Length: 523
Ligand SMILES: Cc1cc2nc3c(=O)[nH]c(=O)nc-3n(C[C@H](O)[C@H](O)[C@H](O)COP(=O)(O)OP(=O)(O)OC[C@H]3O[C@@H](n4cnc5c(N)ncnc54)[C@H](O)[C@@H]3O)c2cc1C
Ligand SMILES: *[C@@H]1O[C@H](CO)[C@@H](O)[C@H](O)[C@H]1NC(C)=O
Ligand SMILES: *[C@@H]1O[C@H](CO)[C@@H](O)[C@H](O)[C@H]1NC(C)=O
Ligand SMILES: *[C@@H]1O[C@H](CO)[C@@H](O)[C@H](O)[C@H]1NC(C)=O
Image (tube, rainbow, N blue to C red):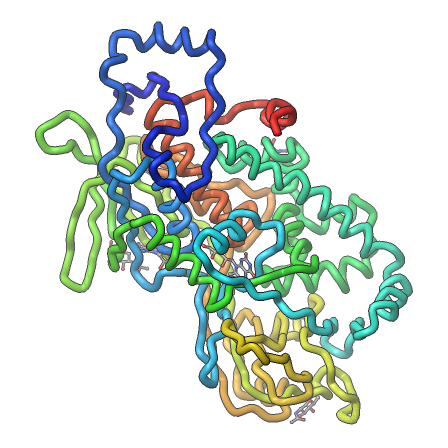
């Protein structure tokens, strides 16, 4: 592997950054004098020729991962570098809306946690608006009847919860909060410019063996060990896993905790659709969008020099093209079915990833739900807006919820659920007409969207590498810890920092041990 100037340190931060005044990225801490001296000695002979900045960077994928990568790449590498973002379908990727009866609804990634600080910052910096996700009333259906029904009275809910589950609900929140607390350390590390060369390394820096160990166990094992009851696990934890990740409690403990954090209050989404963040990040980072599909990548010598670059071959409406890049970021799941990118003539070869993504169908139905399907007598006023389900092989849905459009008029009021409403259903297969006739008393429109939604989790999990080759970085390995918008943004920030530090040889900013202790005193 080539490494011209790779060993020469250059102060992190960079003067170029200063001119992009809207960015608030913090420069890295100064090097301690003895280390600086050592580096000066080592790099003495070539000091006059500090490595030139990269000319061109490719980002493959225009989802939240790719577009936030272009934002952070611009922030780190300055305004001169050309950034090309390849997207073969629509900018936004798994963030997409679907039009039902004249209004747009989130069909993919929909809710954002109040402590997802990258997403929060994007919305603020890009002048977008957020919408509170309305708290409806939740019920849990086991295939025969509702085992739990939320009431609109707070105090009744508390009594019901304690009656059914003791204080396990509270304990669960404390368990999740403890993990979230440690998870939040990532923002401090990243604001000080620290990066990690593996997903496991990143997790370890946040929560030590406890965090990496969560990838080795199922959420069921983790919570059983923590003493939660079978009833609580079946009736509360399982439905949360099914609605958020379409899978049971056999998913890994880390993604399981992320899923449980979605039971917190204060969830939000972006006005106009979450994909607006991707569109605006692209514009803000002044990246050039290429509407095309990347087919393969090969390492080539740059013309008239010994420097190496990556040649990307891609297909657009006007045919097959190629272009050379100094750095490549892959921000799409690497497998045959999804991105289908080949790495040609790499030695050693870049391994093929055979990772399986979970098939999920989102169906929107405008209609009136059939209350008796959920075991209620039709005379009951049906007031639930979210029905989650337990693990029952006879069930053909994971969840069904009333949804609000991504644009809301000032006087928008969510209607009582017994009225005609737009319902969103998650299921692993397309719903048949017979199934729709069971679920709905009446309906007039049906639309569906299929997804390769998120990894099919099966711990022990081994996350794919971030560094695929000298200057090729892979973002989506983080999805094997947990797939969420914020996780893609964290991976993007990390990869941009890693690419920057590796380009300029700032090895002290990569895989630092003991960061938490080190930064604790710096406020
Ligand atoms: C139904 C559903 C519900 C979800 N709910 C939530 C939620 O509530 N909250 C949350 O935080 N997360 C949620 N998620 C997960 C979240 O949507 C994803 O983790 C996130 O959007 C992934 O973003 P990404 O940019 O990494 O990947 P993607 O969005 O998949 O982006 C990759 C892009 O690369 C493009 N691409 C692929 N191959 C090529 C190629 N060869 N050449 C050019 N372009 C290519 C694709 O077209 C795609 O646009 C949900 C996901 C789904 C499907
Ligand atoms: C998780 O399992 C892997 C092997 O699958 C092992 O190498 C690693 O040490 C384990 N991590 C922890 C924290 O238990
Ligand atoms: C993947 O790309 C190759 C060409 O590189 C093509 O022949 C093949 O059909 C593609 N596979 C899928 C599943 O799209
Ligand atoms: C409603 O659900 C019940 C119970 O599953 C079913 O018998 C009935 O056919 C469904 N449809 C309507 C329109 O009531």
